[in-house]
Length: 411
Image (cartoon, rainbow, N blue to C red; front, side, top):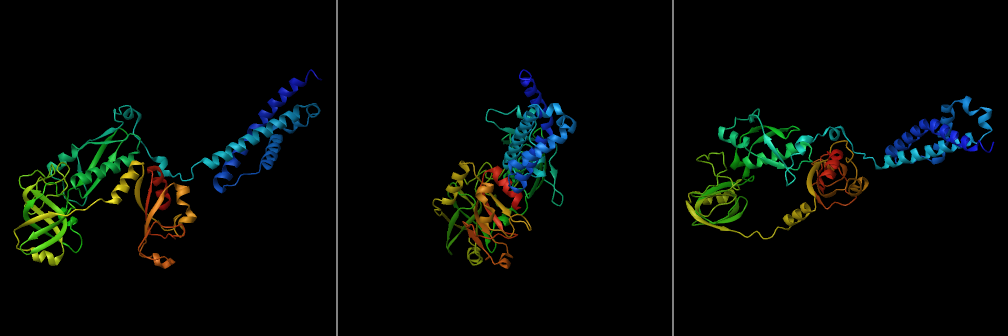
């Protein structure tokens, strides 16, 4: 009997492995589900008891109650092996349930990236160039594009990081085309081969869109400083007095401030900045400034004047944005959806920083925010007791991945 003991132990291990597969699978599933959905870890004693019971049924009553088996160490070894398998698989399922991301969505699962063949052509700078293929189409409800503008858009190039999903590539290319050509609207589709199809609408009301509400645009001839750009604060000194306002358009005589692919109309000022000539070149020219209605009446009939550019100083907010960008952070504006995970909860309850790895810099209250006891207006650097409501706009900062995960919960 002593000589047969090693053989009985090996047979017990075999029997335990054979009957422990199903209990191990069930223990792993239960551990994962409980931890993932409830955050609770099942007691190990209960899991082991369940595993041994299932192993007894799985092994078959005939083999487990056989007198030869009961009188040998085989049954004890098999039971120990089943317990070890059950405990190990349960711990693995519990660990996976704690680490598995809880913000998966069909949208993220469907996100497709560039094909492997395209990724193999990554340049030395680690970027991929997107090419616009096919004719540039028109947008429904908008006038058709001019031939020159259509050609300019067709020849546009954009280099992007190769690891971005196609949806992000489409957004970047659309933003680039909209900013470079001042398009009223643009639609972009990018396939896995880095080929882009573009539909666009021509610029409309370029100058009027830059004039703030309640202001009037006045143009005068003047000696323009070199480097004047749209948005600069200037003082127009004329015989009727001095007027201060932001620049909405400017062009030096003989300059090439007009963006390529566009022909300026006689009553249209050239926008500043343009893609290849962001500022004036200095000398005599024409400048358009947004001023109050009373100041506009004062400047009517004035042909010439002097332009004095005011010092703006260092903008600390721009320095902050630059520092955050160098650290890999980005900004995003999100709107709290009705009935979402953020609606009717405080920032402290949500634990935004620890849960989503983002920071809420400001909250812009929706018009109906006062119905739940919250004041309207802006809340800067909100504290944990700040209550959120549907329609509130959140200005958050974080990495691209963190912002994408938080956007699925908030918006």
